Amino acid sequence: MKISVAMASYNGEKYIEEQLDSILSQTMPVDEIIICDDKSKDNTVKVVEEFISKKGVSDIINISVNEENLGYASNFISAVKKTTGDLIFFCDQDDIWTDSRVEEMVHIMEENKKIMTLGSEFSSFVSSPDAPSVPKWESKKYKNNKALEKVKFKPENIFIGAQGCTMCIRRSFFERIERYWYPGLAHDEFVWKFALCMEGLYMYHSYTLNRRLHSDNVSLRKMRDLEKRVGFLEDLLKSHETTLKFAKDINLNRKKIKLFERNIKATKLRIELLKDKKYFNTVKLVLFYFNCYHKSRSIPVELKMAVKG
Image (cartoon, rainbow, N blue to C red):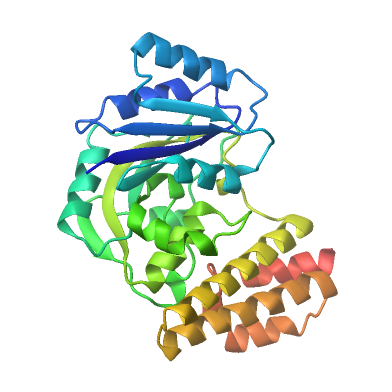
C-alpha cells in the first residue's frame, strides 16, 4: 500500500523543516510528500529545496510552485490531486507528527476497509504570545485512549469535528467525490461531509500530532467581524447545498436528506439576519433550527452582530 502526504505551503519558512523531519522520522515510512507552494513571499521554497538536498530525499519530497496564488483551499486540493498513494495524509506546514502517526493510522485503515476519512486528536503547544487557543468544545471531546469511533449521521456531526491536519483519506474515496469539489471549498470540510454521507467517517481517539499554535493559525480565529461572518455563512451554505446534491445522487435516505435541507434553510435565515437585519429570524432559528448551529452561543452572538452592524 502506497502512502502519500499532501501539504499546502505558504510563508512557512519558520517551521516547515521541523515538520518534514517529523514525517521522515516515522516508524512506518511514507512513499511521497507532495508540497504545493502558493507563491510564498518568504524563503519557504528555498528552505524545502535545501532540506531535500541535505537529506538526499529528492525521491520522496516533491515541491512545486503555483503559477498564481490559488488560496488555501484550492492549493490543498491541488496537492492532493498530485499524490499517487492509496492513502493520503493531509498535512499542515507547521505541526510536528508523533513518531507512530502513520503506522497507527495506516493499520486502522487496513483493518477497517469501510473507513474513507479518518480523523484523529492532537496535542498542542504555543509558539507565539498572540497564538489562539484550541476551542474548549473541541478539546472536551478528546479522550486519547486509542479508541476507534464511527461518526454517526446526526445533526451535530454535519459540522466538521476534526482538524484537517489530522486526517487521512483513501484515494478511491477521493476519486469518487472529486467532481463535486469546487474552488474555495475547504478540503477537510469536503471529505468530512461526504464521508459522513457514505457511512465512512471515523475518529481515532489518539494524539497523533503536536499542533503548533501561533499568530497565523487562521482556522482557530473567532469570526466576530460582520463581513467575515457573512462570508463564512455563505461558504457554509454553498457547502451544504453541494453535499445535498451528492446525498441525492447516492440516494441517501429521506431522513438524512431532510437534515441537510434544514441546515440550508437555517443558514439562509442566519445570512438574512446579518445582511438584511431580519431580527425575527432569531426567533425562528431558536424555535425550529436550534440544532442547526455548531455552537449554541452563536445565536446571541449573531443577533448582537446584526444589531451593532
